[in-house]
Length: 410
Image (cartoon, rainbow, N blue to C red; front, side, top):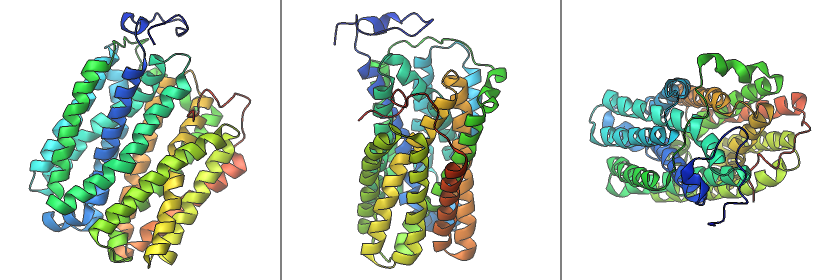
């Protein structure tokens, strides 16, 4: 790995000295570890919602604001961080974003009122929005010529957060109380920060992103379709997923340990979906979008029908997990194909869209849960996912650009 002669440098950019003589992969892995920690922290309330709601004296729908709040802040932070950092070395920016995750977990773990919990979660939104606007693009900068592999490693961090992080948090909450999960999240954040400080090389800015750069993505028709598809599928996903634990507790009548096991199944299926999605996307991004929407819709709508018993619930959750593993890959590949030259500015707009959709989904699902029962959140999510699949089937068309450079390599 010491031989750097085979590593092409990005067009128009001199390689940082720290990247010339060393392998890029430790830096990429440190970004992936950050992705793991952020995904774990952002969705930690999903496995703990009933316990949090009971202790803080709010309904489960209101407790879902712990997912909505960070999403709304992240939507704004993705843009403001991208523009506000100017020409600051991106390494220092990533360190700062990871530090917000640490402080957020500590505030939530120590708070005894729901407003303070929401304040801590809002701080997390800054880290989430900024990280996702910058992280994937920076991973490809670290590994010129191996962009697909770099992205696949980062997405593996996302899948691992779903596989291990969220179920582990739910199990910790069951054994030691929900606050212990956020305390553990704080410890993980410290380890991630130390890892990034050790492994990330200097990442000088290629250019400053201004507000004038942001609309570039929206000027591309294919990208506009991708944004619409993204809104539908992420809103549907989080309208349902945010309330999966209350559903399994109230409808399937499972105990916390069995719920943690099913969340683990969901995450493991997500890893399989990552592999399956990569193979489908290598042939057709349109097919990947349609398959994702259909699997999401069928599995979500299947839960109110089959979820009264463990076998039916397990089957629905496994299929849902596969679809979730495919979901971010499919929509991001479509966006990256549509506007490959607008990675940082386009990334900010994309992340803002995702976070607004995520927050809206959690909010819509919460309203449905409080007024119509927990099964209604699954119906709302399923309908939106199928609408996304129908939209892709009607209007999406694969371009001539090869997918191989963009989709995850398996």
